[in-house]
Amino acid sequence: MSQQQMSARKQQELQTQYSNYKNNLQQIAQKIGDVEQEAEEHKLVLETLEPLPGERKCFRLINGVLVERTVKDVVPALRMNSDGLKKVLDDLLKQYKLKQDEMEKWKKKNNIQVVQQ
Image (cartoon, rainbow, N blue to C red; front, top):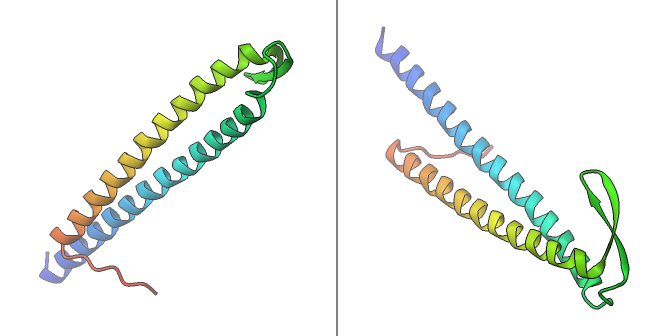
């Protein structure tokens, strides 16, 4: 195998690795967006329900089925879900940062410079 073929192969491998990093970051960013949207929906519902009397009827969608509950039954579950979403969001943000740092180290190690077109 000639030096030129080895160089072309190495360049192809680097391009593939770079694409993998970019795709991973994009997937994590998409998940972050989805979780942020869901967390915002929970926040809006909680802001709407919390001032209401606890015995007031409300409806909740559970696994595609609309069920009747009271505000006092629904609010704690929504708070728990909201807290869980915040934790997931924090974990995803950390994951994104780690992947981004890993990519930067890889770029420095391999002397990669991104050219925008």
